[in-house]
Each structure stands twice: as C-alpha cells, then as structure tokens.
Image (cartoon, rainbow, N blue to C red):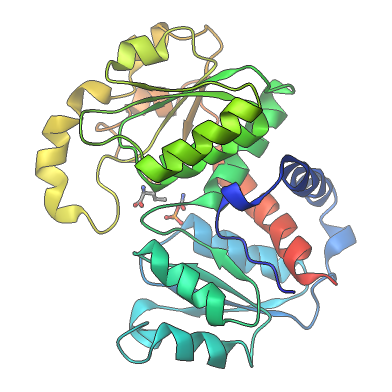
Length: 305
Ligand code: CP
Ligand code: NVA
C-alpha cells in the first residue's frame, strides 16, 4: 500500500530515527544517491507562496536523479477548475509523488485519499511536518542527545507549532508553548501530542508569560505572527503578540548556549530581532539547509521500493 507523509503523528519514533539516519548519509555523501530516484517525477502543487519548501524539494529531487514539476495556484486551481479528487486521480497517472501546500487540512486528506501515489504535506493551515522534521534533525546535530532538553516556542500556536508538538513528543524533547490568549495550538493536536508525550515521559506545557516559558530553555523557537492567508489580521496581530518577541532580553532568561530557531520567512523586527537572527546562538539557516536533506530522505523512504 502507498504511504503518505501528512503528519508526524502518523510516524513511530523508529520511523523518525530511520529518516534521520538516512538524512545524515545524504548530507555527507551527495554523490552516492544521485541516481536513486532516476525516472521518478514529483508534482509540487502550491496554493500559497514558498521559497524553502519549493526550492528544497525541487533541488533535492534533482540531486536524487529525479524530476519535478511545479504547479502554481492558478494552474491546477484545486477545487475550482476541477475537484481535488479528479486532480489526484489524474496526477497519479503521470507522477510518482505529490507535494501539496494548501490552506484547509481536509484538502490534503482528500488528495491523499484519492491519489494512488504518496502525498507529502508541504504545509497546511494546521501542520508543517517537513519543517518539524528538519528542526528536530538540526537539534540532534547541534545537541547530540535531545532527550530531556527544553524547547520553548514563542508566539502563535500555528501550523509550525502544531507539528513541533508532535515532533517533540515523539522525539523525547520537552516543549513549552507561550502564546497570547486565543492563540494556543490546535486543541486536538495538543491533546494527541500530550498523549504521545505522556507515553514518552516528555512534558508539554502551555504558558501565557513568555519570560516564564523562556526560563532555563535549551532552545527558543519562533515563527511569524501573521501566517499566509491571515494578512488582513496583520495590524491587530502585531499588537496582540508584541510581548512575545524573541529579543536579547528574552534570550538572557534561557541557558547561556541556547539555540535560536525560526522556520523562516521571518519578519525581522516583529517576532524576532535582527540581532538575535544574526547571533552566534542562531541555527536558523542550518534549519533551512536541513529541509533539503531531510526531505530527500523522506522522498527515498516513500518512493524507493
Ligand atoms: N519554512 C518554509 O516552509 O518556508 P517557505 O514558506 O519559504 O517554503
Ligand atoms: N506559519 C507560517 C509558516 C511559513 C513557513 C505560515 O503558515 O505562513
């Protein structure tokens, strides 16, 4: 049966570890894998803009000997020009896998249901699992043993935060989320991640005070206050989130060698200052690089028989 990559919730800890082991091999020895997906084609359907996700998948597929086709919002025009079901059934006759970046999470579930080929989540309003995989991989590179360490996420309980909750719970990393009232992570995701965390002896906590959440943290993570699709709320959100900025003062509360993370794109001067992005504690561009290595591993796991 074909396998999809929609949520980290669906992966076992062993599957995650296996993806990371392959990620390390791919990162160390690019040439060894340059034909492994020869003859395979990946469709990238993007209903929202992208730099990292699109480019890392396209370059990654090329480096594995395969090919990719980028389909911008106006091309397939999912659900408008044709139904998701018809698009899924048609594309499955041409390509070997589909990456979908879209709004409603139910749309990717629909795509996965009707596609005969693996569907990879390139971000929905609910989740961003490829990002969280690269993030945990980056932390393993930097910290070696991540078990029992504390990651504090500041700001909007959005798609990136939701996927981090699953990823931390599965990987043995304690996670604190500091969010203003009304902007906590998705309730169902939180409940499911809490259950995973409990069985893994990991703690998962919500805070309203960013300083309390940052205290003694090994990692501080943030993302934009206004996600794609929420642009109209931007002015209001700047006011609501202003105390959640990751700046020099907040970082002083964490461990001295705290790692600073951001999935990018960043709105410098809003959720994070220039100074912090450029600081020696920042691993932000390593995260961005690791998107490609981790996604190449995911592609091989899904496509190589
Ligand atoms: N982090 C991330 O997914 O970036 P893009 O939106 O540029 O793909
Ligand atoms: N939360 C952001 C992540 C971008 C990678 C968004 O959805 O726009």
